[in-house]
Image 1 (cartoon, rainbow, N blue to C red):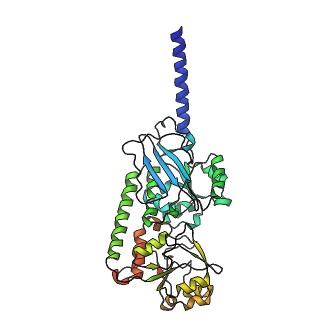
Image 2 (image 1 turned 180 degrees about the vertical axis):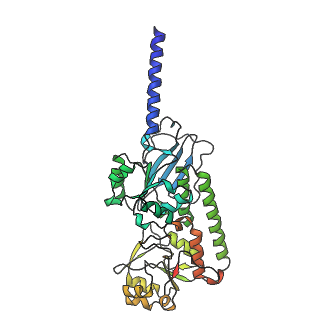
Image 3 (image 1 turned 45 degrees about the vertical axis):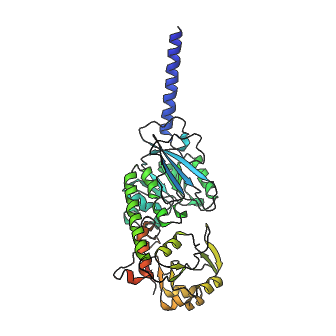
Length: 394
């Protein structure tokens, strides 16, 4: 009699555990800011990220731990953590199901076109089911998918079409945050059962740090080897170019960036990724000594006085002609770099709707941006080279 009771109890326990594990398998969730457990790391569990500061990827015996670090501007000690578990396997006991993403991902909604180049590089563009601002996609292949209705425009932040995302029912929605207010609409998505993961690549200050975010996509698509290979090749090209420039220049031209908006000039700080690129390209950025986590607002007159000594003017908003610059403020036409015609903008590859490949594939291939900049600042280094992302403003 006692054996029968024990046997019956054992069966109920087994069925209960099987049900619980099955529930975990079908319930994949969003990144969370708590883990609720202690991780059991295996011998290969070290962080695979080398340069990027806003993400860590740790491999464990039966899952991968992703931590997004301070995922929006101004965030401090905010970590979003989730766990990737391979489809067909049983999640390890103790993982909160709301923090699990089953991989490989089969469908994704992206809030930024910067994610397109990395997904495409891994051969997974067919998994993109939704996009915020399909008009701003540069990739012809991905635009074709959008025109065929295979990629739906889901809007953005306050105008985000949550009902459409629910209808698409993606495995994950990849978002970026520009401030703590982003957590508001993210919370609403999570309440609807939509799985969310932050992407903070735009906050990286090292160009290779931005490119290294392809490893996140490698983990999501179970294509880690390809992602590592692509990144390592890019890092080699970038560092080789950087060394070549450094070893073959004798001067550093002074560089001005940007364009004022309503008498305010939002200046990129000296610890920004574009400042790093200018330094690597053999230039001297006017605000190289500054540090900030956001663009710094200056009055037009203050920038004008400092910009008098600039040799080159780069990344000039969306302008395509000298007349557009003078129209902003006639004084800008008096700058020496303007008079000499040393004006170059990063809008050589732009669709008629405004999609700019500099912000799409340029994120993954900073060595091309570096070569563009170096060829502009030191044309003798690359005499037969035609810039890829940049064009001269006439």
